Length: 434
Ligand code: ADP
Image (cartoon, rainbow, N blue to C red; front, side):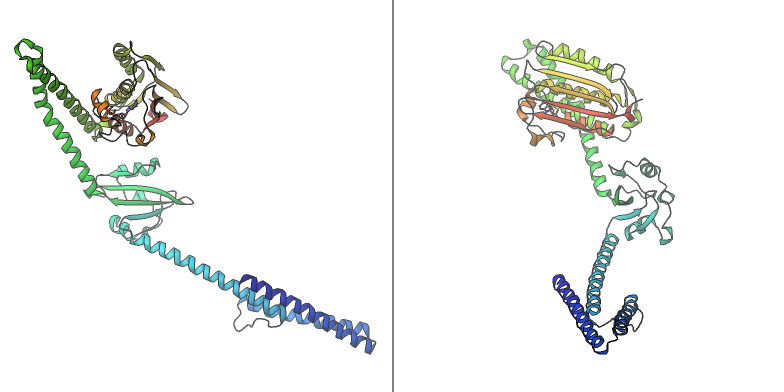
């Protein structure tokens, strides 16, 4: 279509040139016949320029959209106007399409069942959908107001202030209603932000029930199991009182009851880590001293069978909760030995650099195939269940590590190669320093 138009336009220019050539030739003949060369030439120029000026005048009125103005109809001008009309119609179509799209987007945002509010960089309200209007009781006149003046919940204001929007904020009550909401902020267009507030009460409530159930069940099982274990130990300690036939079964029962105890202790540890009050116990954690104590135990257990290196920076502390952090270091270090064959090497590093403090455990062990890496921190996920059970694993160690690190704004990083070994590590930013 565009090619056809430009072809028509070039034809019109050729026609115009032909017209100029013929009319000029006619005037030349007239000049030759009359002998008044100068006068005829001047009248030709006057005639030609006048014709073009008239066309420019019509064209200018037409393009300005003056009412009743008609487009010039002679030769090249006619084609130029047709070409422009086509362009304008195509442009109008595009604008209509654009408008249609933005109306569709607006309607979709309005129909969203979750509250959506568009904010400026400084959290001033730009627009909001019906769900946001219902949830926050905002009115059109609130446009331009800072969101903080409408939602005065301290955790929410802190969330806006900190500008750490990579993670959503879960509020267990919102605007005086006892319902859990998930708040998420996204940058969406040249510094504009979209805040989504989703009612997650059902999910939050179910997760809470699950957590409470696991914590209560573990707690209830702890005492009976301690009693059973105590009796089993007593019987094992008195071999003369036990018929020979029972020695092996008793040993197995004792082994299994110790495993159950370890699982219950880990489940209870997980519930403590998930509890809301955990971070109230933040203090200066002297990681170098913790690692020194772990090193003593480790060397006692493994010095004969492994090459062990502890490269620990002195006096390097972080802000955190001591007990859970201790379990992170213990779990990662003991895993390194449990999954490395005798004769292997384990190196523990604790050091700082410009970005923060870093903990790493490197082993020359069995390694992990890449397809397992993302699932290792799931509860009870094991690459090789038999091997894990055999070496006293509960399948919960890395889940504990993950949750503790999350609560300290860090995360577990794992690099591993089958048959070559693994590096488990975590990083603490400068904010974690005392
Ligand atoms: P477990 O008690 O079974 O060791 P964890 O949660 O500590 O449970 O670890 C989960 C799984 O991750 C383990 O079963 C094991 O397969 C794998 N794993 C953990 N640490 C290592 C390691 N250093 N080398 C190889 N595999 C590991």
